[in-house]
Image 1 (cartoon, rainbow, N blue to C red):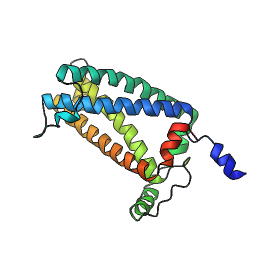
Image 2: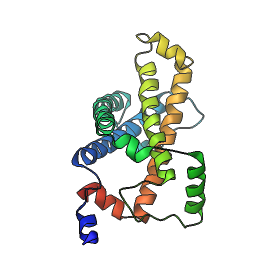
Image 3: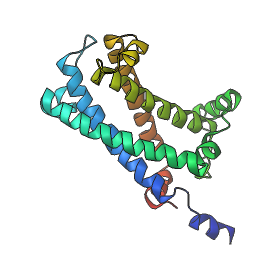
Image 4: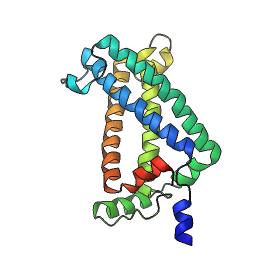
Length: 201
């Protein structure tokens, strides 16, 4: 009886699934178009292969980037408000203790970390999700400092200037790409997590 109840239990509510997939779409579009924008004026001694970029040229990439930016901003805001308002944010991601992270990290590296309950996150997952939420906030702030540098001079200075804001934005993007890669690998190893994010159960 308990197994039937567990199968029917909602792991991810509908609002979470919708905002998750919209955020994923926005992030992918922003990364690919952002790479094309980066190539127009690189800050490091390398370029992103044009086959990996979106937009065709600088103007097209900017249009894609700004369109996805608004989707990410408003959808991300809805995601945060629903998470905080429903209490899910505190229930799922906290408490987050360094000792728990180290314990679960060692278990993960030795292949002993279990994924029996999809409705509960281990400490490594908690750290990863909290980190990526903060990283997305940093991406928005540094992006604003670049996009509206004249309109937000205080924000620009807090970022250390325009060029430093570009570096911060790029590094935050690199962290996000690394998170996505690890996230996709983990989903491939535990495919039930994908089904739960699609069906909610």
